[in-house]
Image (cartoon, rainbow, N blue to C red; front, side, top):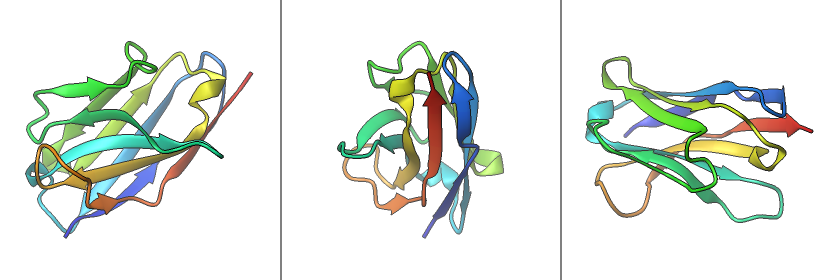
Length: 119
């Protein structure tokens, strides 16, 4: 089964950018639909963006639409999230996840990477 490791989080000022990466191992990435999720302290986990196995389609939460871009490189077994025009409300732990079907629950999760946006 696939193992996922996120990187790229950090501290950034409002309006800045960060690029998160999720490295996958132990499985063929093209078999998995992937997604980015986030959870802020005291809040429920929310979907940020998801992408199909081929990378042909993506879905974004309204709160990040136009600012974030999800992408994948199946040959390099990497999932990315480019985050621009960051806001303090984007502060959260960000997680990548994978599932073998295009719909349904995500079965495989990374350990998370912290993103903090200062005002």
